[in-house]
Image (cartoon, rainbow, N blue to C red; front, side, top):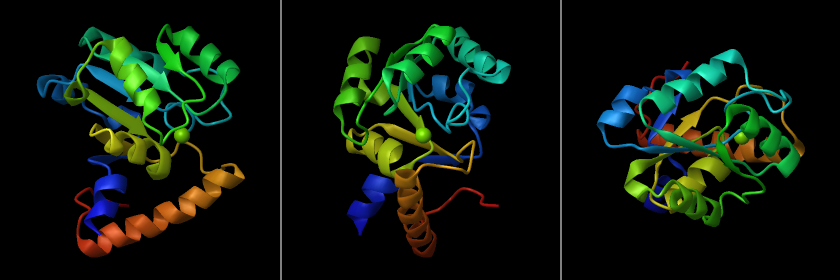
Length: 175
Ligand SMILES: [Mg+2]
């Protein structure tokens, strides 16, 4: 059972990316963020970053935190979104596999201990980050509508959350 926790339990859980405290992360030695795109930064069907998302990237930059967008989506989607923000990206990342996380760490020239992973899915973002020993922050998905595979993943996610709740692992506030 400890395995399940180690793999799927995020270190933090927040309502949205805007609740993430960059100052706190920076003070604890974080220098890089690997973030998911769809339903993490914007809804899966929103093509461009919102003003709020642009400000979020500016705030990270101002604190010297490098951000890489790592997404399982295709080059067209991830490339155009990331270029409009002027940030590095990895598309078709095949999360939860670890290679994309390794590539991001290497290109940011950072140690795993200096990187935080942000994403809305336990089975791809959190699992992938945890496997690589990275600090993981899970966010509530921006949009509730999802494709078929994601729906299936969400069902498993709910089971895992139930399990963590029962075990008393969940330390964040739920509403
Ligand atoms: Mg996502």
